[in-house]
Image (cartoon, rainbow, N blue to C red; front, side, top):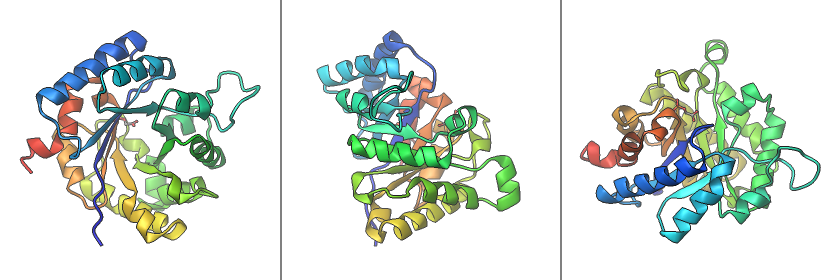
Length: 262
Ligand code: PGA
């Protein structure tokens, strides 16, 4: 049964743009999308700035009623207490964040985040009404040793332990070898893994939840390749890193339907 999932184009800024730069950037992005008469029914557009930008982004988006969503790049597994340097989901909710990226490969690799920790963060996000953008993906060595879907599927299963499927979720398949490398997966590769991930969602939650959940592809997405991914039935959008820092490029990615004339 075909279910309509609104495509989701998410910009992961990583550790780029301070709070002043974030204001100018979001304002210009909104102008660019509005000049191009972007239809947000064609694609929801979201930005994921650093924590220190979120208050500025919230103020701008709410003051100007901009139709852009936003969220944080990480969240603590804990709600409050002696966790120096951590950010509670309660604080993100207080800034009206709708989403939070969890389990990005840079967190898993550079900060040693385990599957258990990622799972605890998904549960924490849900406690505070945030929708996790849960990242999974295999390294080049994993791909060689286990094939394309085994590692992302195992990561997804582990992350969903005890999770209530009715609380909202976006899954992002990001092969580690494709991130920042300029070497994106092929649309067929992305589709194969996205379909396997949707299968896990059906098994863990229900077919209905699986059909309603957006599964993104991420890794060297740009305006020139976005349409080929979105043509795949199980790919519902993209998590964009480098190209999300270029307003024209990101806005063009969001308008993928227009530039292929679909
Ligand atoms: P990239 O990053 O688009 O620069 O490859 C994607 C990501 O890390 O989310």
